[in-house]
Length: 179
Image 1 (tube, rainbow, N blue to C red):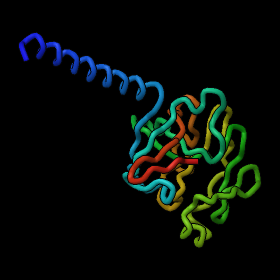
Image 2 (image 1 turned 90 degrees about the horizontal axis):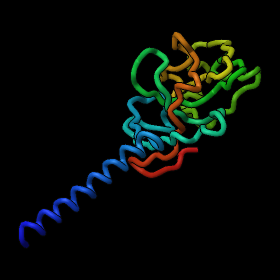
Image 3 (image 1 turned 30 degrees about the vertical axis):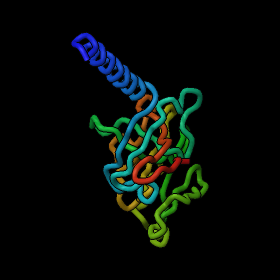
Image 4 (image 1 turned 60 degrees about the vertical axis):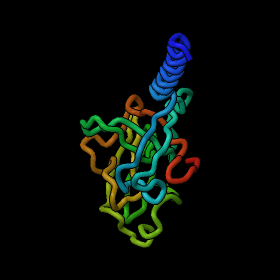
């Protein structure tokens, strides 16, 4: 191979690598977020160190629904992203009494809660009532014994503008679609 061919080959590889990097940057900025679970607040649904993809486009047409697992910017002044489950929608009243979450007075069915928590009628102190403002959501972790969430935050509501996207796919340690 002469110098000209080597130069042509190197340039071809450089273009391919640059295009791939550019594609990853664009996809990450506009379509998906790659997230890693840092704590046990979403156990048993999401475990510490699980990795997942978050769909940034999920809420273009309609807002989050109760039960959605979403990623959002911290309301507590931190710069990090948090992941929790939507419990209260705009305009609803959320409260916890004796280990049961009530939304507008009706007990919430929560099949995602840890089985050992269900055996403990008071997984945490009673809370609320919280009246969720328009354009905001009330968030809780699935592992109520180990979740710092809307029940405890200074500002207990996550605004629509703070939401990054909806958890879509857990890909590590095994592949699993969420919801």
